[in-house]
Length: 393
Image (spheres, rainbow, N blue to C red):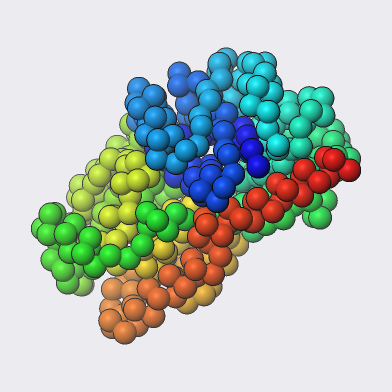
């Protein structure tokens, strides 16, 4: 089956959904083509990481050579409210690929809406990465009302599937899409990259002079206000009783908030080691050497990568995180509560080897229970085949 992805957020060097999903669907015998923005207009999330797109040509070639997936970049006009505005050539590019089915990522985007009103030319499927808790823009009410009145009807009339990538009812409650068309297929992890390794643990700690008995906490992500950068810094400001090292993979933003975060981290009584944002293929070693993975605010797909490496996760209490950490594989703290955050970290730091091993084993078992992209890719293929059947009927 030839599957054409249309994903304006794709980047071959980062682990967002299309990167591992396309890799595994190709490996399972499908032919995958990813249609995305031109290199001058890579998604703003990557520019926030400091990626200007200069290495995209090299990254594209590496990804294509390693996976067999083809990448086609389409002329892009720019962004409107963080949504890419592709030229009309996107339809010609998809048409030239002669797909069996087209998979358009992020049903809320301008691109997805354009495909919805385009003539019924191919079988199509969509997904949504949105959460109800993230739907807070002042214009969101007007957008959602318009979407329910117009695009929701097109989706339901044509029986297009909209895969929910998180166990949240945003597409049903906010966009009004019938639940029968919105299967839940979770994000996951690439277990060919992410797995436990005592050898990598020792090697990393030796390289950075971290004692093998130190308790190491890993945070990967932007140190912005939305991600709880200041909360993280303040939580680690005062010394922990057990020698504790915080490793941050990601830098504070270059603004006043970022300066405050940086100042607090620099004054910490604990050891703090800072790394710039890493490519997806280079991230595993950071999880493999740590004892606990933390997420101060919101949710993160990195949860699955950490778990695959056998790390328990401590994250903010919200509906998604509480569900994720309810399997003996982690814990949650009260949102914004520094004292509770610290107390939960101390709890993990003081666990016996037997106790922490239970959490580590539960983390690995959780991933094996259906969050490996090998299994996830097969689920997507199942619904893509159903999309073809719906189109033909």
